[in-house]
Structure formats: structure tokens, C-alpha cells
Length: 526
Image (cartoon, rainbow, N blue to C red):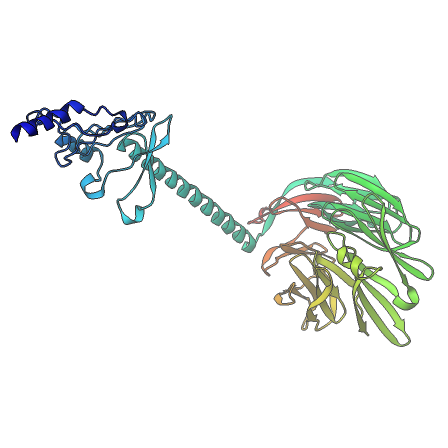
């Protein structure tokens, strides 16, 4: 029996895996020769010999101390790392393989040898990808860079917030601060013309007379002058455009801050004029039996024409055009027997007006025994109509809708308005002086203010109200605080704010000065 077993064993050893289709079979040798074999894994009784040509990175399991070495199978990966023993793996990788399993090192960048691994440390850090470059030192450097970047962002945001707060604080301080005196930035001698008028133009001043028009900058210098030869000039401005027309005549001239833009001659007598922000202007013309409302571009080309009958509609009292030039609001006066009728009419020359009516009328309001001599687009979508009894505030995005009605208790001497508020000045109920009331565009009363000198002019901007009369000057903020009150040594003809901080152009009888407000009055000390 022993001889038979020896023959079978010899037959098995002589066979030695000669079948090429069975390359992966194991060569079992005699017990005497088993000790000479390389026992690669005593726990794995059949050591696996991966000899296929397709697997180029053959795994060598060489000893019990190197059981956990990772098989890096792709020789084309230049940044592969041989983890040779469990001690080195514990030193290089804080994640113990016996606790967490073998780490998958994936290729990130073939040229730079970048790998990524999942961070399984803290619960808050799970799922994040930490990039390393061959070692944990690179990971720590990457983390340090991120911290520096975060600190830099926090510093930048903090600086911006502080700057905004400082700017807001300065603005608020300037809005409540009261000034006692002024310094003269520049002065030039001028001969005041009794028939001269001044309006705000851009951030400076436009002077117009029957002889011509002059543009005066913030230093009081005349930038340019244009002769117009207009007998009875009326003017309107909006932003950097202004129009001067001959009331009762036929001539219209358009200007911007660079000079004259166009000139036009109207077919009928001019009654009123207004201008949009881009220079398109509207003119009310009076014929024998018909009134015309015509709009022209800033170059003088006609855009539209509206005809109204004097017998049916009455006489035009005032017109106003929106900033974009698409909307028009008019006030007409009609006497019917013993009754006085006022009609307000709204036109829209955009898409809405074109779809509704051929004449572009989108709304109308009628009033009896009430005069409305002034209408104004205080913003592009808000119209204020000032009567002798009320202030009507309309919202007009496309069509007019009444928004608020302000009752006027007492006779109003003056009105003023800006893009933020509207106001009135009337005689004080008791004693001498005047009472100023300021309302927001929702019709709510913002504040009241008393003053006791006779005034000639009011100039309202978005931030303040300037009142002048004789040698007296008063500047009140939109919140009702006194910014500046002063008595000059000459009569004030006009005063407007410039683009400079606390700077104003003041025109006197014989000079024009650019002044800057100061906290103390150095002139009176002298």
C-alpha cells in the first residue's frame, strides 16, 4: 500500500502544472519540501500566486510581519506608497488598520501625486476631503493656509463694516450738527441784474435773463454764456438738462451742462414748458380756439401732439412731465356759468397709453370751486397737485391712483417739494412770522418749523430746505433741525447747495461767493 501511494505522489509532482489553461493551480509538493516553500500567509493555507499578465502589480505577501502591506496594483501611478509593516503604518497613519480597515488611496493628480482620503476623525469633520501631498506635514500646511485665508476674510469684512459704520456716523453727525459761520472759498465781482433769475442746474446754477443764459459752477465762475434774446423767459431744469422758453412768444432753447443743445420755433404762442431728465421737453401752446400740448426731443424733433378745446377743456394752468418723459399730468381751468371747474388729466405715452386710447389719456379728475395752480412729478411715479385747500398725492406707475389727501388749514403763501417730501409755508396762527410744514410722500406730517423773517426765495433739495429773504438765511434739514441761520452783510438774491460738502453758491447785489459752513463764526469775532 505504501508503494502505491508513493507512485501517486510522484505522478502528481511530475505533472507540475503543464496545462497552460490551468496556470493558477497550486503545486503541492512532498511534505519534506513544504518547509522550503515561502509561507506567505500561515492563516491562508493556500497562498495565492497572481501570475496573470494583466495584473502587473503582483502582490507579494512575504512574512507574518508584513501581512497588511497594501498591494499597489497600478505601476503607472507615480506617487504610490509602500506601506511595509504594521509599525510603520501606525506611525504614518493615525488610523489603525485593525480598527478601521485598509485605507483607499486614490489618485488625485497623476503629475503631482496628489491623493485624497476621507477624514474619519471628529463627527463634525466627517465627509470632508483633506488634500495631502505625500505626508501629513503637507496636510497641516494646507490647514494652516486655510486658517490664514479665513482670518484674512474676517479682517476684510470687519474693516468694511467699521468703515460703513463710521461713514454712517459722520453722515448722521453732519445731519444734526448746527453751523454758526462760514468761510469764503471763492468770490467774484458781479453786477446783479434785477431781471435775472436763477434755478438749480445739475449740481450748480443756471442764470437766465432776457439777454442770455449763463452756467455758473460751484466756484462761482461762469462756465459758458449763450445769448437767447428772449423777452419774457421762463425756464425748467431736470438733472443736467434745462429749457428756456419765451412766454407769450415762440422761441425755445435747450441746454445741457456743456452748452446749447438745440433751438426751436413753436407754431403757436407758448404758455408753459417742462423738461424730462433726458432732455425731452413739453410745451403748452395756445391757439385761437384750441390748445396744444406738444413734446419734442432734445434735438427739436416732435414726438407727440395733443389738442384740447378751450370751450370744453378750458385753459391750461400747469403741466408736468415724468423723469422718463413717458407720462404727462395737466391742470385745466374752466368757468361754467358761476361755477369754477378744475380738471386734472393724466397721459401715458408708453405701451399702456397706446393700448388704451388714441389720445393716450389714462385718467382724469374733476373738482368744483377749487383752484389747482401747480402740479408736479416729484418722482417718476408720484404726482403732487397743490390746490388752495388740499394737496393731492397720486401714485402713477401707469395710471393715476389717489394715494393721499393733505388738508390745508389756513392760507398757504408758498409750496416746495423734492423727491423725498413736500411742504407748505403759511402765516403763523398767532403773532408774526411763518409756519413751515413738511410732509412725506404718503401725506404724513414730518415736522413743523417756525421762523420770523420776511422771505423771498425757497430752494428745496433732497436733504435740506434753504429759505432766504433780505440779508437773512435759514437752512433746515429734512428732519426739521436747524443747520444754519445767519445774517449776511448784503441782500441775498439766490442761494443753492453745490456738490461740495457744506458748500453753497450765494449771489449778492455786487458779488457771487462760494462759501463753506463752519462750526464757529470767525467773522463776528473780528
